[in-house]
Image (tube, rainbow, N blue to C red; front, side):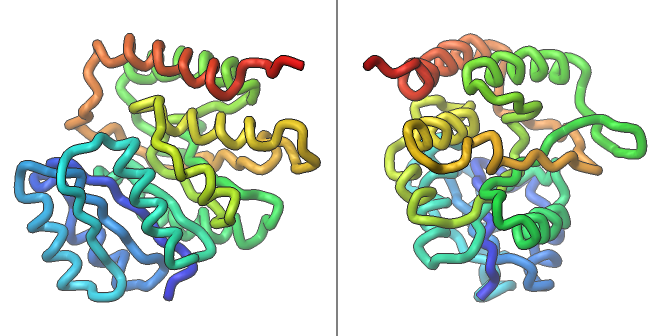
Length: 251
């Protein structure tokens, strides 16, 4: 069994899922892939079942009976992945905006750094890298990232990249037991839960166990399910996360 299981949430991805890329990666045996079908209404489940049949033991499918949203699909997928106790679990966007090969780099980083518990892909368009985002999404993303960093009290650059890996532990599994309240920004909530769980303990600060991995390649894939109006909801959810996890404790 691979030391890493990667959760890939899918909702109506039949038309754009790169089945060949996933099958070729799975065949290499670097990680197991767990596709979570989030109650798709197209042929996504059929496509995923085909992948599962083509790569037995390396690709599995976890179908949800109805659409519950990306946050819950990821949470349930991570819990399912953790049940077999791999060393690491991850979630990866189905559109492959982040190449699958970066999974290997994330694993190597965690192998070499036992002090690190989480690796987050970070979309920084440095010279010599191919990180391409639409200009409006870049600027909106920077405003949100700044707000999220203030709420979390951590100087994080990119909370929303859909490529993240975690070291499996009882603490991590415990933090997945409760559904997220943040909707699309469940990534921020995962960090908030980590910060909150370390308050008043001798554990290292959350900022020291998270590593932002500057991606060498990232592409803005058409077909995003986030609409401009969703950002108003995102702002409200960021406020809810602050009050539930980050507000200073009394006493």
